Amino acid sequence: MSDEESEGDLPLQHMFSDLPRPPTPPATFARYARTDEHHDINGLPSEVKIRLVGSHPLWGHHLWNAAIALARYLEMNQNLVQDKFVLELGAGGGLPGIVSAQIGAAKVVLTDYPDNELLENLRFNIDHNISLENRVRADVQGYIWGQSVDHLLDALPPNHGPGRAFDLIILSDLVFNHSQHDALLKSCELCLTSHTLLLESSAMDHPAPSMLVFYTHHRPHLAHRDLTFFDKARTCGWICEKVVTRKFPVSCC
Image (cartoon, rainbow, N blue to C red; front, side, top):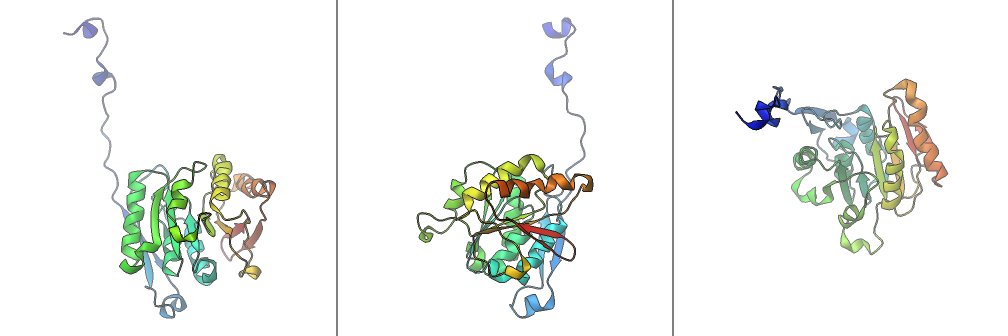
């Protein structure tokens, strides 16, 4: 018997022995179906098949309704992304970013928390939804909101010039994370060519740079705190406008 056991203390491996845990659930798949005019006319596949991690503390195992609405919105307003540099923050399964690449974005950088499982899943979705010849349009980067954006900007084509930055940033269902509002705004300001944020259905020809923010009030009693994101953006000098789609509120700053 060891000295520590004789003194009544259990070795660490006994004190903190692992309890049996169920295996990680398998990945699931969600399908985003295009309307006829969006795939027949443009020659796009009729659906986007998104793989979702089986379980994840950062919600990467869900395809949120706001991501579906954002993808649809981009298809209906393709001028927002065509020939543009697009950044998706908190991409999850990456549906809006993948749709952006499919409909003609010059470059899309999809980001999520630098967790290998999340990032590998994003790469899988790119590989299985974007043709080989167009895959150069999409890139995956790990990123923590509010941190340096140098590696995100470095992912853009070098011929964009020394002051290269993104034309459009897309966010879906992120503003419910109230503690991260300041970090999100900081990242967006660092990544855009100018911090002007617009979204209005009657002004779809507005020039980049801009940010599209699609959101659902997952906790209705905290909806006012979701909206403080836009109050903070206005305080920082962003122009914010709101569009209400048939199902989801959409805002830009």
